[in-house]
Length: 284
Ligand code: AMP
Ligand code: MG
Image 1 (tube, rainbow, N blue to C red):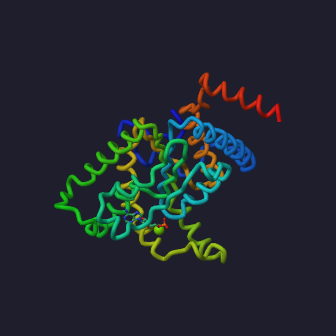
Image 2 (cartoon, rainbow, N blue to C red):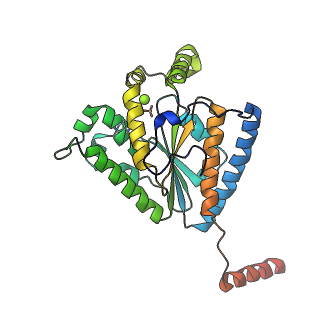
Image 3 (cartoon, rainbow, N blue to C red):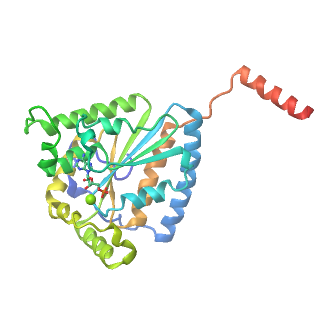
């Protein structure tokens, strides 16, 4: 089992997963070197993924504000051919999106074979922020919501959706960047104190911080109900950025290695074309 993987038996307890890196973590320099190597390998693997044309990878990122979703995505995928991956950030749904079922907008943005798709927030907001803020649910035009069953039903829909993806060659891998309340405060303060970070600060983010416990509880249930063999969750310690990035990169690389994408084997016709090509070029 990969490090930080959330078990598939529904027994995950949020307190067992640390927000800080493991003891004996290597120095920042060593972590950065490892990240460089992983980034290179990721680029090579994505080339094979593209040549192979059977699989896609979908990496989902969820976290509280300031946990480092954006910078992790930037650092981990920075070395991949820009044509090989696409990032989608999911914010508050539009009026049109609200008139669709809650999986519709993510289904439209899935990666095609050969590509890596990255979701910065995702359908999981539907069992997180929407669960913590009932007014978001009220805005969804749903016919007769049974509050006792709605979250169970959504988990069922999500598991079914992701299993469908897995069966069709899309490897789903999900990251919860697990930041502590204390570290979030520190990062919010630096957004206020450092001028080039001011643009990131939104007063509204403090409202979600004020509901920390409710969010943690929503995360815990979500991780229990939706970490499965076909779409595992990883609870990544997020208080140390260098460690977080390497931990994410290791999982992404391992996911691709396990798919083992290959260059297609040449048939006799293609071999003949190669020979013919060489002959013609040599005659020039
Ligand atoms: P950010 O990612 O910080 O730019 O903010 C995006 C905001 O959109 C976050 O506060 C999310 O919680 C919110 N959001 C994303 N998806 C949904 C959704 N399905 N319903 C309501 N709010 C959402
Ligand atoms: Mg926000």
